[in-house]
Amino acid sequence: MGLLNLPIEILHNIVESFGETFPHDFESLATTCKDTYAASGKFLAKHNRLRKQYRRFEYVDLDNGPYEGEGEATAARLLFHIAMDPQIAYYIEHADFKWDDAFDETMAALMAESGDKLKRLLQESPYLQAAGQDPEEWYKEITEMDRDNYRYKYHASVFLLTLLPNVRELALPAVWLLGFPNPDHPMETGPGAPLLAVLDTIPLRANDPKVSGAALSHLEAIYPNERFAYQQKCFLEIYQPFLAINSVRRFFGGGCIAREHGFRLEWFTPRYNVYSSNLTHVELGCACIDATGLERFVSRIPALKSLRFSYEAKRCGRGRRWDAGAVMAVVEKEAGGTLEDLSISVISTYGSTGTGIVSMQGFAKLRTLELDIRSLKGPPYISEPDQSNELDGRLRDGPAVPRLVNLLPSSIESLELITDMTDEKAGCLQKLLRDYKTEKEARLPHLSHFLIRVEATPDDANGQMWKAIVDELLTLKEVSIGRPFVVFEKAHCYGKLSRGLR
Image (cartoon, rainbow, N blue to C red; front, side, top):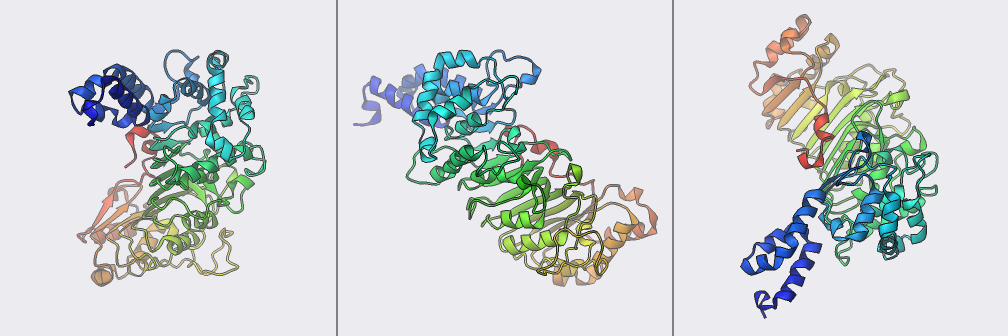
C-alpha cells in the first residue's frame, strides 16, 4: 500500500513522528503534496514555533535583568523544558551555550511542574548508564539551588549535551574554561570525574554506526567559548571529547592554553589516540600553546589541511617566551604531508621568540602561507634532545634569516608576510629576499600571490632601507603591500554562530 493510500489517522502519526525526529526535514515532507500538507496542518504551528525559538539557540542574558518571557537562561531550565517536551531537543542545530548562567529563580516552579519527568529522563539515559552514574545524584546536582555561593551547574550543561542529536555547530559554556570544575584537582580523579565519564560516552555513541540518533552525531564545527584577549584563556583539554567525534570538520579555539611548563590544567594530556578523521580545518587564535602541546594536539588530526595559529602570551607572564622554530618543526613533522593552508603569527611574547624557522621543505602539499617575520629572527632551529622549547632569550649563534627561495616548498602558490616598518624588520626582510628575483622562477614556480602585511602604509616607511625594499618589491608583478594584519577577524570569530566564520 502506498503512503498516500493510508488512512488519514495513520498518515497523521507518520508525519508527527517524522517531525519529532527530523524537524529540519519536516517542511520538505509537508510540502510533498496536498495530502501530506493536509496531514501536517495540525503540527505546522508547533513546528514553526519550536524552529524559531530553538534552531539557532543561545541563552537569555540575565545580566540585563530578571528572566521574563520566552527563552532559556540556564541549562537546567532548558533541561526541564526538554523533559516536558522531548521534541525540543531535536530542533537545536546551532547551539551557542556560552552564556549559560548559574542561577535561575524559576527553578522551584520548574521542579514542581516537571521534576518527575526530568528524573525519568536521567534514569533512562544510556549515557549515565554507560558511565556508571547515579541518576539521583545527578538530579540533586542539577536542581540544587545555592544562590549565596552562585555555584555553576556543570551536571546540567553536561547532561544537556547527551540529549541533542541534531546539533551541527557548538560553543561550550564560557565557565568551562575555568577548570572542570576545580582547577586544583585533576579532571580524571577530582570533582570533575563523573562529568568527564559522561562526556567520554558521547564520542563512543556518536561514532557507533549501530546507535541511531546519538547525541552530537551530526556535529560539524566547534566555536570559541571565550573572547580573544590577553586576560582570557581556555584550557585546550576541555575540547577533547568533542574533537573525537568523527563528524567534526572544523575547530575554532580562542585563547587556548596548552603548555608543558604551566599549571596542571595548562598541560595538555591527550586522552584519545586520534581525533575526527574528518577534521580538516583548525584555527587557534591568540593561543598560548608551546611546541610540546601543539605536537600532542596536531599529531592526533590525521587529515589536517588548514592550520591558522596565532601566539599570545597571557597575564602573569604565562608563555612569555616561545620557540617559533620548534613549533614549525612539530607542525611539519606531524602534518607536513597533509597541510595545504598554514598561518603562523605572533601577537605578543614579552620575551624571546626562541629559535627561528629555517626550512619548510617538508610541507609536500602547502599552497598558501601566512608567516610572521618575527618567527624567522632567532638562531636556526636544530632538533636536539637537550634543546629547550622555551629559551632564556640568549641567542646561541645569532640570527640566521634564511633565503625565501630556500625556506619555502616549491608547491607554494600564495604567500603573505606579516611585519612592521622598523629598521630591524627591514633588515630581516632584506635578508629574506636575497636572490629572490633571480631564483624565484626556478625554485618557486607556482608562487603567483605575494603580499606583505604591514602596520603602516608604505608612505609611512621610515629610513632609506625600507624605501629601497618597497621600491624593489613593487617592481615584481606578484608582490603587493597590504593593509595591517588582523588576527583571524577577532570580532567575527566571537560572533553568533549563525554568522559562520568562513
